[in-house]
Image 1 (cartoon, rainbow, N blue to C red):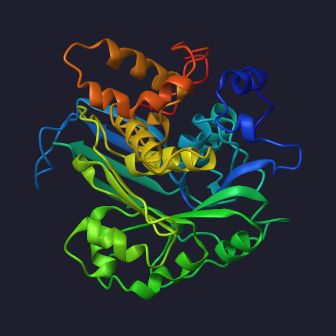
Image 2 (image 1 turned 180 degrees about the vertical axis):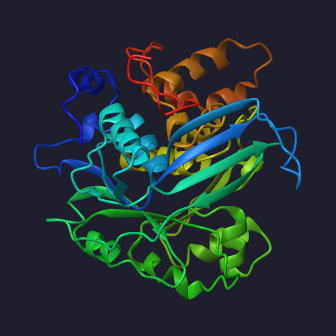
Image 3 (image 1 turned 180 degrees about the horizontal axis):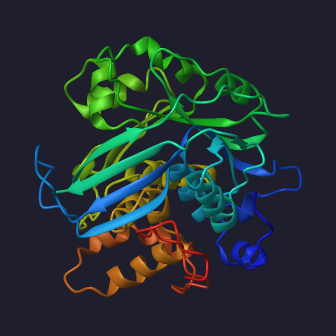
Length: 370
């Protein structure tokens, strides 16, 4: 579906590799494996309020970008991890756009993905207002899965989204092969919040729900209590706390950590949770301390909400570097808060941008030269 990108070697060498010091000739070619559904996201921002029944609302901003599992895949790739995605793509213009944006635009390996003739790409319209969002999605029945030659492939890690009432055989298979599994979970529309739905946590290294999800599944009324309860089922429980940051419990060592969130003016929160997970996975694979991993996940999520769209709002290392340089020069900064991010000093490249990152655009109809 795509032709080789002549700029790809430059893209790869320009991107900081957080695992460079750890790589050996015998490593798997893939750092992180994902599978799931790719949506086309159409995001409206600048709304003064939620849409009101019987009225027409005008948005001051709009962006289109790949969504769904593409949010996580793009965030991982922009942080320098070799990312493989297995997904179905429609053969409509939406599917072609998403494939091109991920394969050629982000360097994501789609060799385990496929194009399904006659299948319409799923679409989500997201409306952002007052720091919240409302989403409407449409999609036809998903095509039946087709086994890939080697799926899941050998990988350092995989990110799995646990689904209520359905175990995923590939999670156990990947774990048996030595892949480190990081899991998140979606909102349970049934309202059951059955802990049995988390059975795949037995194969996972880390579980990263938000506070509401964690409390529902553990029947607790405190996110920190929920994290400790989850740590009885998985080695590392990480609960995101919104404006309060994130809290983690390492069951193997007994270590706990909490890092506050970075206050930013959010344009669009779409995909922020996925970006947090990508930042945390990056730090974990690189062997960083627990608190640094939480801080980095929170930083990347904070940078992402200042841009349109889920996947194409994800920051790269150049934006992390620019933030670090900028925040140190701002007057009135809390020295203790700056020290929390001092680990970036040894990681970030000079704040330059060898090529512009793709951003969500109002239309998918323009060519690459527009």
